[in-house]
Length: 110
Image (cartoon, rainbow, N blue to C red):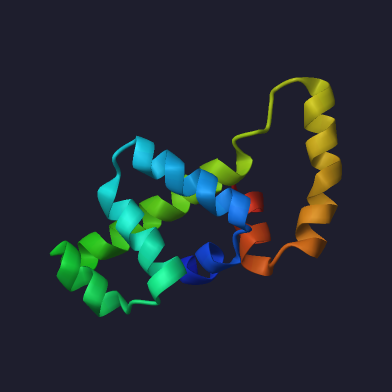
């Protein structure tokens, strides 16, 4: 499974706050609880499953969909214009070599 907890903990504060506000705006309570639990509380997966009243498969799906949302959030500022695309392509090296591995992988997958 993806290293969701590491990715959430390695997000810079601005990206985390923006993602949290986006989830709050969309009323994605389960995602919001999961991201806060991983970032702030260090709650174990078993406790999260019990609190959200999920089974193991549902929890796996929740984590996978949150990972997809994080990937979308990391790459949402990529515009379609050629100049912006070329600029983003030049930033790939920067992202790969200066950001933590998990963040770079999530960005590149998207």
